[in-house]
Length: 172
Picture 1 (tube, rainbow, N blue to C red):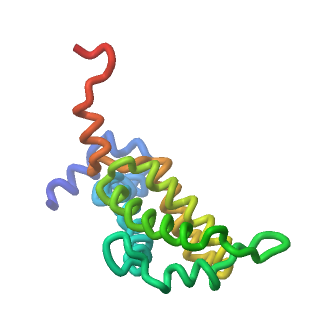
Picture 2: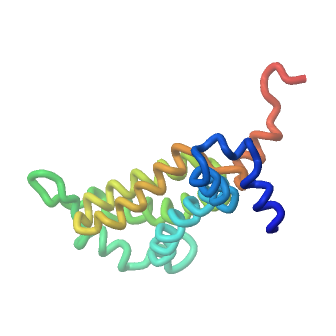
């Protein structure tokens, strides 16, 4: 390990960045690869939505009464001239509970990753309109979702594995 660190500091390729600071930056980057950051973003975004989704179910496709009650009486959309009730609260509660379970699973697996992150970003915006004082955590979720949307799932994802095995037009 020590030898590889010495080689790193004497490697002319790593000297492209300015001086010793650039080499330290490069050394840190070798211990924090992009794919690890992408995986962490996927898991970090998935966990709070998964936990929220699982708390809404009493059994297979059976919402608990609290989930429906929240959408029927507690949750309000804070828009100008409002707050407003959610339309069709039972349907909304069911759709949200399904999305909060399905989208995190897709995100963790890295399957349809950008679409799943987009869905969670949309949900984050609606949650922000429902709970305006929660903006610090909502901003964090939005930043993670935007990171996944922008940079993709990384190499530890089913999306990448499927793309590598899918023949492209013109390939023979």
